[in-house]
Image 1 (spheres, rainbow, N blue to C red):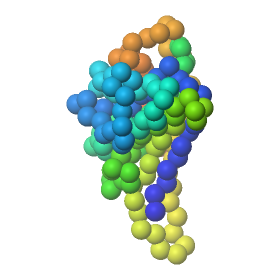
Image 2: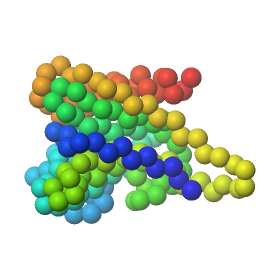
Image 3: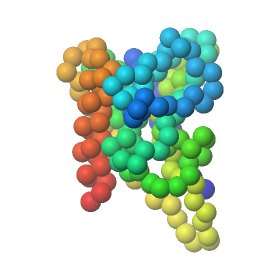
Length: 162
């Protein structure tokens, strides 16, 4: 069993995942113009015609377990603690799906837990924190946005670790 949260948001300017060493996983066809790698993060924008999905491999460091959507000078950041184990869907704890116009041009910010075998009466717990973060200016660079998301995530990790 795995817990898999999907936060659907209206079309952001772009969605963002941390990508240490600029490593990400295409989980289907990616439109090259929609994707950017920079500053230890990967961003993706909706394509009008094609759905896209990307993910990131599990990181050893807790500072890399977040996903974000950017809307002008506001960002939604979802944070989780890193958990050891094998994740579903290409072993990705964080993913972004972008829907084409025919499906409504929304984005899914997805966080997954590792696969776990449960016995009768056992339960899974997977705490998350969602934050709305104001950015310094209306169109900040992806690098600055990734830095702001990482800072917000670090605060969330401190809270989740209590």
